[in-house]
Length: 107
Ligand SMILES: [Zn+2]
Ligand SMILES: [Zn+2]
Image (cartoon, rainbow, N blue to C red; front, top):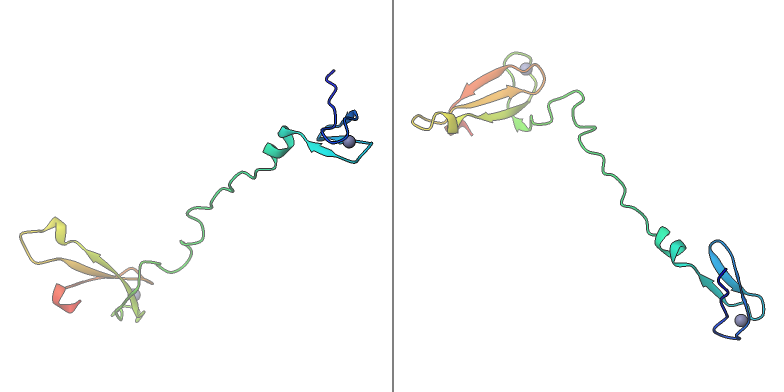
């Protein structure tokens, strides 16, 4: 058993689980274990939830669907796949999913 002495009054420290207390002068010495355990672990971030329900979150371009009349569409640019030709751009309705081909000039 380790006996520790109070640095203030040289009395004997009463060792507890989390701290050592001098009953003579009231000096309190916290153990290192307690100090390190007080550091909070970073909370896990929630990823990927909450974005997928209902409407297409990528449908941000204002375009009225000729099929259902919904006024937001997702812009799908296929230009990199057909680099020799004009850019292929589709507007995909955010509600019914109907795709319409448009020219790049329309954007
Ligand atoms: Zn003391
Ligand atoms: Zn539509």
